[in-house]
Image (cartoon, helix red, strand yellow):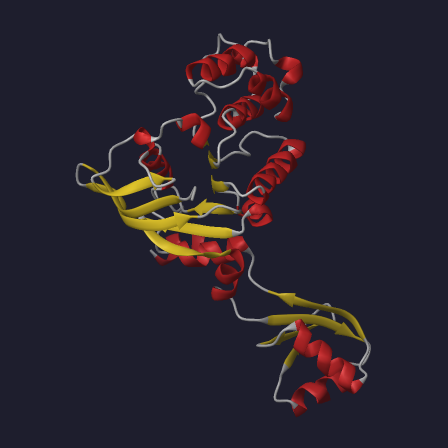
Length: 310
C-alpha cells in the first residue's frame, strides 16, 4: 500500500522541538491537505518523510519503507518542496533529462511531463528567465517525472496565475482518482477547500486534527439554515409549533440554528409554505481552521483591540 506513515515522529533543533511525537497516515485515493500556521512543523515533517533530515525520534515511511531504502525513489514518490531548486543556467528539458538519466527513467517521460505542465513551448529557455509560476510548473513536472504513486507538494499554487491554479487543482484531484497518495501543504484555505478530501492540521509541531474535510467543518460549527419566504408569518408559526426559532436578518432572509436544510424543507412542504431560497450554512475552512489554531499560532500579528487591551 503506497501510504505515507508517520509514527511518533519527533525533531528537535537544540532546545526547540519542531515536530512533537507526530503520528498520522496519508492514504491513497484522496487529496490530503496539510495545514498549520507558520512554524507548525509542516515543512520539517515533509523533509523528514523525504529523508532530507534525520528525526530525533519516531519514524516516517513511504510504502512501508524509509525514503532512503526505496529501490526507485523517484518512481515511488515525487515531491516539490522548493521551486528554486533547479539551476538557472539549465533549460527545463536539460534539467528533467538529467533527472531521468540518473534515475533510469525513459526520456519519453521528459516530453510528456513538459507538455502536461504547459512548458513544452519553453523547454529550451534558460530557467533563470522563468517567473515564479513557471518555476512552480517545472517543479511539478519533476515531481511527476517518474510517474510516482505518491506525490508531495508544498504550496504548489504559489506564483501561479488563475489558469494555473485551476490546472493544479484539477491535476491533484485526477491523481487521487487514479489511486495515488497526494499530500499538499498550503496556506490558502479557500483553495485547499476546493481540492482536499482529508485534512491533517498541525500546531506547534503537534497533531491538531486528522479527519475528512466534512468532519472537520462539522466539528467546528453548528448546523444553520438560511432561507427566504414570501410568507414569514406562517413560517414563524410552523417553526414555533415545532420548538424552533428563526431570526430574521436585515436583508429579509431567515436564519435557523440547529437544523438542516433537509429538515426545514420537509416542514415547508408539510405546511405548503413557498420558499425562495433554502441552503445549509456552515463555517468555511478558513473560519474552522482559525478557530482550531487560534492558540497554536506563534507568529500572529496583534490587532488594534489586542493593543488596546494590553
